[in-house]
Length: 153
Image (cartoon, rainbow, N blue to C red; front, side, top):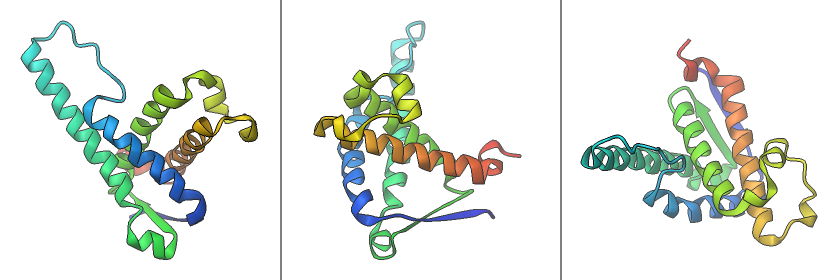
């Protein structure tokens, strides 16, 4: 089984985890990527959305669980074929919510390139932007090194 272990700087990551924890509450009440399900029966639609939200909450909990007591002692997180897909989806959900709630004024191109003067950003945008980049990096690491597990090849 492929496994990636990444050593992270605790002083840099801890504030970003706070951003993720704050957003996790908003992810309990709505989908990060809302669905247009107008043609479905309302009861079926509500049940489906409820299940999707439960899955989204579970995935974000799994992401946060990587940063447990052991992480705070060792500074290492591990990704493997068992958690890769869940972590990639959780990162995507949080990034979508960050974009919606904090980063929309930056625009998609800036968010995807990451080319921005951090010192020019307001404090209320700087941490969410750094979190956005952090989660993108996690996704890239997993996809580059564990793509067989994600793609089922």
